[in-house]
Image (cartoon, rainbow, N blue to C red; front, side):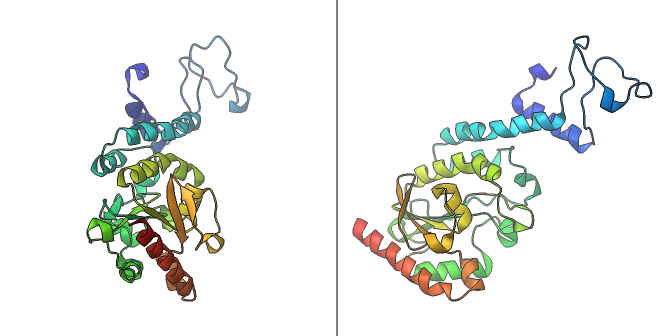
Length: 263
């Protein structure tokens, strides 16, 4: 019986039925659809079990997802445990269409943590954030201020995503998808405990600052999760518009100065 199934088994059973084309539940009593038009059907007290729309059940499960994520994130006592928790989190539909979980890269003991939006096609294929041309540019940007992914903690950067799975056609994650994954993002920052957070792009700024408009936000220090935050353009934005590189260089110098002041 459904009452004896745990949450995840029940959700998996419902999703399987939906995939098969089921769009309504069955009542215990048969319905003669030749006598009663579907639009006229009514289920009164005589029915032992009222029909429940599948999409309504799925919606309830989605609404519960942030709370489930929060409980799973809180139980993660290390970065590795957090990655394992995200890997078994089944409530984000983006996971089904993604090739790989793109969790993080760099030194988790780094003083600088970069958070960006979601993986693109190359990152999804490899399972690592910031690869390809954009990744090469990012590495050059931070080498210019003596920071690198593979450096010792004091000179390292650590990179993570708001969304660890690639959205279809690399679209921006929806508000519901971001809300669902934010408990993991917050726990990630707690575990890494960087001196400085860098938010790259509008999605990251919306998720952690509640604001968008990266052109206005960049270059100005803010606060999020108890950390100083520097919003910056993404490497992809710099590749599209080289004029933004001057502003980004100024932002990198601000980060360098903040780290020196905190040393």
